[in-house]
Length: 316
Image (tube, rainbow, N blue to C red):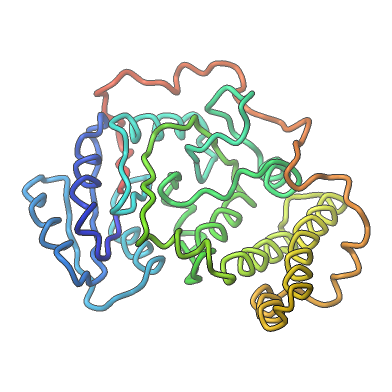
């Protein structure tokens, strides 16, 4: 759990972790130099042997602080919980057990992208990219909705230091080489409030533009799992949407906004011709024929409560 100026929420966040039905866990709280009473509130819980509290000597920022928390973790899994969110009591038990049904997977999400799937399911790298770039999407979940296997997380060097897009960049890196697990919704509570970063993102042109850059880098990477025709269609989808946004800026007289958006995106001018070719893959449509693993009931993924998982200590 990373924290910065969350005195109004952190007590509920901590208590939601300590109430988990999974017994074998550690809670690592890393305060990034809060100016309010966040650190004092967190200290009240250090009498619990599962809680470890750390204070950074200087403010690292959001994602570098997440990487710092991962360095301190001792378990096999990394489960982030922002200090203004909460977990339902069964969250960790369900996520860990379901991840262990797919040992090759590097990341799992508790946001269900398709209603007709019986969760948990796993997608290969190719099908995960198809779902994200040629279908309805599914890889845009933030850390609160995610669980990471620690070894591939560290192999990928954790989160890059980029505002708004670090979690997406890491997810696309992990999904490029490992299966992705999707679980049913309803394991975490994501709190909306005026002071959170996500609310600021909604009104910031950087967010959308930088996501375009991350998508470009993922789709043009030498190890991109899509076939060449799929890769070309995905690029047309991503850039077609982006160019429509830029064109809207220009038509409304927001020349500087359009130019800044383009610069932040890193979209090469030479790519603009390709979006003139209509894509047969709807960007927010559906993808047929995905090779979904464990579409039939997998009752092993739904454990008996209060049973600790050996050698699987998640950190929030």
